[in-house]
Length: 500
Image 1 (tube, helix red, strand yellow):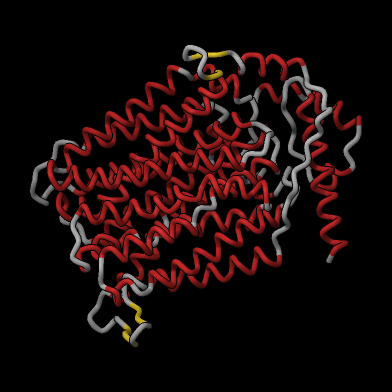
Image 2 (cartoon, one colour):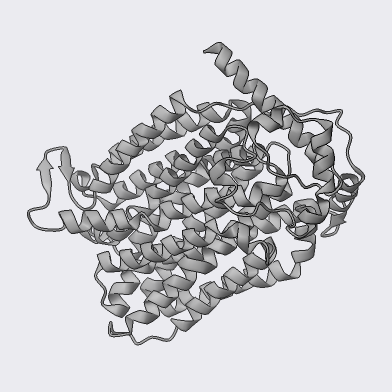
C-alpha cells in the first residue's frame, strides 16, 4: 500500500514539473499529453510543442472539446481521482436540486409562506457560507482527501436529519436541516482547487466546464428524480409510515441521496489519491510572466488595490450577481408557475429539468464555443439572455391563464443557455486569474460570494413577492443582471490579459 502511494506521489510530482516547464514557454500554452508521455517528457517534445505555436494561435488557450479532452483524461495526472471529484460535485448540488419540486409544498404543509420558503432555500447556502473559506484552507493544510471525507460525513448526518422533517412538523426544523445539508455539501472550493492544480492553464476552462456541467446537472436535472418521487408517493396510498421511519414525496429524495453518499464515502476512502502540491521557489520566470506580474501589481482605486486584486474582487461580485439571479428562480419558480400559469408542480419541475439538461449540453460544448468567444464575451452574452428572459415575463396578468410557452421560453433562456454558459465562463476566468498558486483559499472566498447570494437573494425574493408581487422581483433582477453585463463589458480587456 505504501509503494502504491509512493508511486502516485512520484507521478504527481513528475507531472507538476512538466507543467512548470510548460509555463516557461513564452506563449504560456501547452498541448494535452497522456500520463506516460508526461513522465518521459524530453527536450525534443518541448521543442515540438514550441513549434506548434502557429496552430495554437488559431485555438487560443483551450482544449478542443470535452469529448477529446476530459473524457479521455488527457492532461490529467490522476483521472480516477478526477472522476471521483466530478461525482462529489454532482452529489453536492443534487442536495439542492432533488428537493426542488417538493420544497414549496413541504413549506405549505408545515404552515409556512413565501417568506418561509425564502429562508428554507437560503439556509442551504447559509450553511455553505459558514464553512467554504475554512474548507478551502483545510484542503491546503490537511489535504483534499481528509477534507472531503469530513464533508461527506456531515452530508450524511444532515440527510438523516432531513428524513425527520415531517415527524418534527416545524418549519424552523426544515431550515435547520437544510442549513446542515449545505454545510456538508460545501465541497466546491476543494473540488475546484483540485481540478485547477492537476490541469494546465491552457486546458483549465474545458476541465472546469466539465466539472460545472455536473454541478449544474445536480441542481437542474435532478428535479427529474424529485418529480418521479412526487408521482409515486403523492397518491393517498403511496406513503409509508413506521414511526421514525417514513417515506413520502418529501422524504424519499433524502433516502435516495443517503445511498449515493455511502457510495461517495467508499470511493473517497479506497480509490481517491490525495495530492500534495510542491512548488519550486527557484523557478525562473519568463519575460512574459514578469510583464504580467508588473501589470497585475499596478495600484488602482487610490492605491487601495492592485489590478490583480481588483479583478479577483470583480469576479466575486459578478458571482454574487449571477448566483443571486438564479437563486430567486430556484426559490419562486414552482410557486410562480402555479399562480401565473396554473401548472402542476411536477410539470414545472420537469420543464426546469429539461432546460437544465440542455444547459448541461451547452456546458459540455464549451470547448467549441470558446473557438468563437472568450470568457468575458460568454459571460456578458449569457447574462444578456437572462435579462431578456426576465423582461419578457415582467408584464403578465394576475390570474393563472397566461400562455405556458412564455414560462417555458423564459426557463429555457435562463437555465438552458444564459446562466450555464455565462457562469461557467466566470468560474474558468476566476481560476485562471488565481493562477498556479494553491487555489483552495481563494476558491473558498469565491464560493462564499456565491453562497452569500443564495442566502440573501431568496430571503429578499420572499419578502418582495409577499408584499409587492412578482413584478417587483423581476425589476430588481433586471437591474442586477444588467449591471453584471455592463461591468463585464467595461473591464473585459484587463480581465482577459491577466487570466492568460
